[in-house]
Length: 253
Image 1 (cartoon, rainbow, N blue to C red):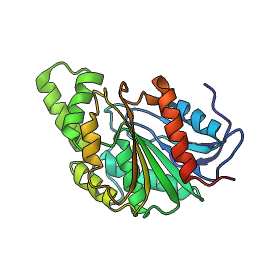
Image 2: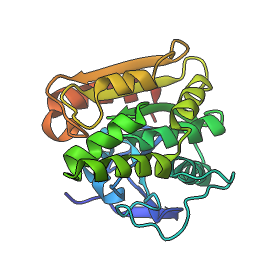
Image 3: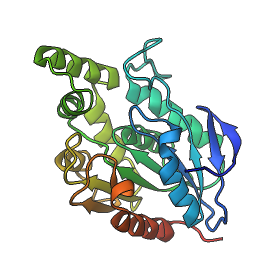
Image 4: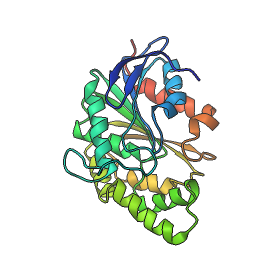
């Protein structure tokens, strides 16, 4: 799948990818999943470009497996990827003027919510989260190591789960609930989840979004969906719901 020509380089080796026929004022900012990159967003970029939205993709740092070149220390002297990536998403949102919609994946969606909350949702018209964020970090880390990285030694998996929790940020759930609670009243959110997701069970996403009565909160449930495969494997369900949500909150040109 080929992407449109990019323009306007931004932090994180990012670029804006233009729609062939732009129909909406808002720019869609993509925040990729753990282990992903701006290239893994190609299918979604193509989808929103075809809808008439320009899209922005960028690379989060510290994202090549478990290899770290330095301690993940944020601007606010907090240790953890959630804090580092919150800084980076905030920098990207600040770098591009004009109205934006954020589209974030798996648990890095928590860092997108962090950045939106820091900016008091300034110029952010809405948020879509796919297969996350999740509140039960230890449970989902165990699933990741069991299902995706296939760490067969149970003792090693226990230690690795603890390491992932420290690497991400031990205050994750508390901060996530606080950030969601601080989003503005009637802020639009679409949460996409697959019922067969073995990495991030639906209950962990529901836990993350507990207490969202102040938001315009919608869900897209994919009964046969797994982790992050909604657009690829169930486009007939995924595309119409996302398109309607975007059209409802965006400004037509």
